[in-house]
Structures are given as C-alpha cells and as structure tokens.
Length: 311
Image 1 (cartoon, rainbow, N blue to C red):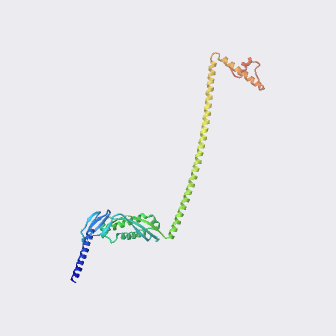
Image 2: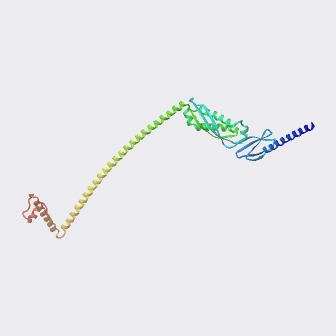
C-alpha cells in the first residue's frame, strides 16, 4: 500500500515539475520579442507601463514583463457607415465616408482611449451631422471640402490625446430622398436647356454680326476700288494730255528750227503744196464740190487769202 502511495506521489511530482518546466520554457520563449517594421509593442512590468518596443530584437524578463498591446503604425483606412443627416432646410440626406489615419504615439493609442478606431468613427459621424446641419441641400454637394476639413480638424484635436493623426476624410456619397433627387434632376435639365438656348442665340447673334461686318467690308472695298479706278483713269488722261502737248510743242519747235534753217522755208512750202494736192485729190474722189484755184500757180495767193502767210 505504501509503495502505491509513493508511486503516486512520485508521479505527481514528476508531472508537476514537467508542467512547471514547460511553463518556464514557454515564458522564456515568449520573453524573446522580434518586432516588425512599422509596429510597436507596449510592455508592462508587473501591471504597470514599462516601455515601448520598436522594430528589432528584444528580450524581456519572464513572469515580470508582458506585452499587453501591439500597435500597427501604418496608415489605415476606416469606413464610416452611412448615417442620416438633416440639412439646414430640413432635407434628410444619407452620408458615408472614409477616414485615413495612422498611429503616431503607440502609448497614447493604447491607454488614451479604449478603442480609437470606434471613437474616430463616432466623432466623424457627429461632426459630419453638425456641419451638414449648417448648410442648405444645394451647398452640401458643393462644400464637400468644407465638411472634410472640419472633420479632420476635430479628429486631430481629439487625436492628440489618442495618439493618432487623421490625414484626410473623404465623403463617399451624399444621397438625398428620391423625390428630392428627381426634382434636382429636373432643375439640372432645365438649366442645361437654358444654357443651350442662350448659346444658340449668342451664336445666331454673332453670325449676324459677322455677316453684316462682311457686307460692310465688301462695300468699302468696292468703293475704294472704284475710287482708285477713277483716280487711275484721271491720271492716265492727264498723262496722255501732257504727252500730246509735249509732243506738239516738240514738233512745233522742230518746225521752227527747220524754217529758220537754209532752204527750210522752201521745203516747208513744198510740203504744204504736196498736202494740198493730195487733199484736192481726195475731195475729187469723194465727188465733193469745192472752190479751188484755177491753177497750182495761184496756190500762194489762195493760201495767203486764207491767212497762211509764209514769211
């Protein structure tokens, strides 16, 4: 009987020490920490914050040090669920969005708030409702940047104690009721038609202006061409008269020189007599009755009577 009791005791001791050594080995293994890049481990020593482990190899004291939080430092995307908001003109719209944030202080992110992701979503929703409540329905679609910047500002103010930084907040959808949506579509269609009519009228107006300007320029060009034509014709006639007068003067001058030269007078009289005979012959061929001298010898007296005197 005693052997049985001792055997059970030895077995119990063996199991106890086996479990104890297994726990010690596990704790020693757990005390070795390899922290990846963009990750931080929060270490507590005997239940109190001790230090923050950055990327790399770390060794902790078993049973004394404990990693209680592991924070991811990379930028993360958080969806903000759709929520009902009322505009200043009391129109109900459904708004959802997305937050882009990252942890910048792992200690504050672990101890500053229970769940900073949930807290950020709730704060973004309340801020969105507050900002949309100050805007009319038409302005809510135009002031997305205002809503986003206000949400980012409020979240960053709270994030100072939460150890987070909100980089941006984007509104994904603003959905008004179907009745309001239909009326807005009609309004957009009417505005588009108005712009089309205005553009058509402006185009017709510009076309008429261009046409009248073209007619005006054409008439001016025609009148200027006619004026230039008349000027050119007048200059041509003046040039012609001037050339004729110049030629006449030169011929008279040449005749005067011939007459003043030796034998010039006789040659000139001979030329006149020749022209006279030719003229008489032409008149005879035309059967015209003319009064002529009885003979060529009477030509001088006849010419003198007509006023042609050769001196």
